Image (cartoon, rainbow, N blue to C red):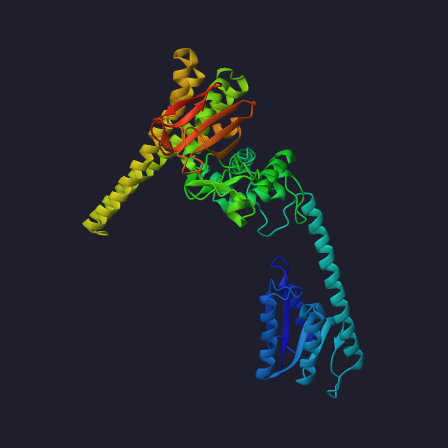
Length: 510
């Protein structure tokens, strides 16, 4: 007859050969020679976790017994068979039901008596060890958990995929990865200005040649790890200050991001107020309307004001105020313009890098055509797409270069008249730039329908819209807009004594 010798080590570092020698010597005392032993080995199998290797070992033991020819099982220590109460009791019942003798060296146990009956003392010891194994496993687990928690609190690496973006592991501790941390600081710095949503920030970074998906940005902005706070029992070194993190959280909660409709930026977002209820007006893509009236009719003001009219008068007032503001630029404000210029130069470089990549695509397409991987038609189609992409990048570079030159003109007023520098800077302004200027200087805009001038006695409907703009410095600007021309003009400006005709044709669309 043959016997199974169970050999299990939970780590590769542990020696299985030592167990084998012990078991051979132990089995010889019961009349089994080395050639009578069938070894079931498992290296790296955990009886506590009952991992795949351990379960495979347990299955092999039962399979060999069921195949026949086995009358005993030897283990060097009962924990080699198992450390789980349920598993151990299952093995005991399996051995008893199949009349398999079980020998254990540490502690010395023999499951069956010579007549095949169950040894009551051994069965009791089996049960006690199973209970002890359960308690030991629970204690070890708790001890291990406490140790890992203490390591986490110290900022130590405790294994697993726990490294967050912005950090690396050195000597079992998390330390700041300066290359990745630079992007994190840039994300927090830009977002804290309140000028971006995570979507527009992702686009802004892409314009600068940095690939940062909006989902990644959202995760970074919500993680307290980056300001050094403990989160989920784990602590990392601070990359940004707590004050900066709180500022970004405030921006995120208040959602002070410019309103958009499709691809169109609303220059008057959150500035246009309803004259009846005081609510902020929203846009239906072409007109500003009272948000309360549009949502549930709680306001009686159903008037709709053309969006291009609002955008035009807001820009007129804001650009004038901004010119006055720029005349007395402080050194801090000049530094802001210098940083803007640097950012624009980054974007130009990113566009140039993209053009280089597109040129490399053209070369690869030519190689693919020569090698017969694509035909002439596909070559022409793909090259056309590449040429279109290059044109887009070149147009963007031209626009960015003009803005860089204009800002340089503002910063170098001695080289040309200040007014010319200002006009150059804003002649090619993008919507986002105009939005920033308007919201820097304008507090609110209120528009109400009025009747003005000589009217046809048969109608009582208002024929004009009075627009009142309040600047943050306290000045008031008044305009009178006529959807239909009045005495040759459709827009009038209040000069302080009377309304003065200002424009003959409708302002161009922004």
